[in-house]
Image (cartoon, rainbow, N blue to C red; front, side, top):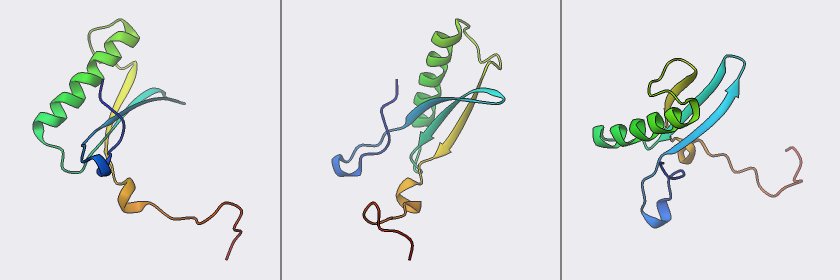
Length: 89
């Protein structure tokens, strides 16, 4: 499976696979680095396909689980909220 989100301090590039339930069914979301190459994308989708196959017992993406790929912008949109209990400004 693909490892957890990016770890800039160690210089690692990672992707995250996260399974969640919605009103429309289960969704497998792959969060990937912005500089994702074609080879990286293939590795992520292969890991996602293997996970879906294990979860459903089906060797296809038959619609039971939706698959979403999103860029990892968390470093760009991260908001510093300050210390807990600081209250509103």
